[in-house]
Image (tube, rainbow, N blue to C red):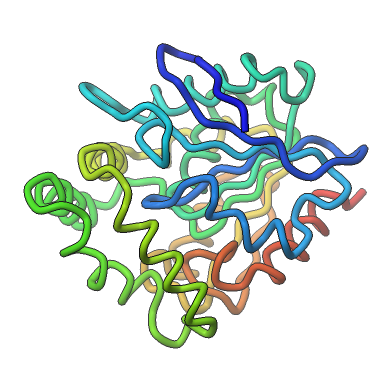
Length: 265
């Protein structure tokens, strides 16, 4: 583990993997932290390439969010983390983002197009949906008042449904660490997504991109994700038999498909 200070915040980071492949930056999901990558890493996600995972601002044990926060701050945080760690030695890196992390990956690639070689975004949450935004603001207010625990079952009934809990121990681990997240920061992440709309920025992305959806993902159904892919110049799109959290729910599939894309000529 390495603690770095960037963009006026302190972050927990960890280098993983190793080898001569292009460095891969891992961007987690809403309600997760850097340990969310454990299953996919065990399945070989960073075999043959250096990886960097981190707790984004407000998640895990990185500095918590107190005050104004938006997607521009999140993207500046990531740029600062790359600079502070020297990850990629100043050259473009590959990035992989899951769910809200997939939306953050898209936002970062649009704002810093020369810093990204290839991008994979799964179940991409990029905002721009009024009904969803209202629900996110309601959940933000609720977790601030009552904490994470009362919202876990309803949230996971959709994002981590019963038929995806094929490993009971894995789900029990995921559930407990989700409940343990900081409610105030989780609320700020929800409001960030509620205020986001990356649709106008999709055309700015230069990276070779793969956009993935899950057949069993009602939060980001394939038709919606496919529209995102259509807005990114040259992007590939694919629907896979997985859910909202491909790196946890189907880690072997995640490692296999992502590495195939990153290593392709």
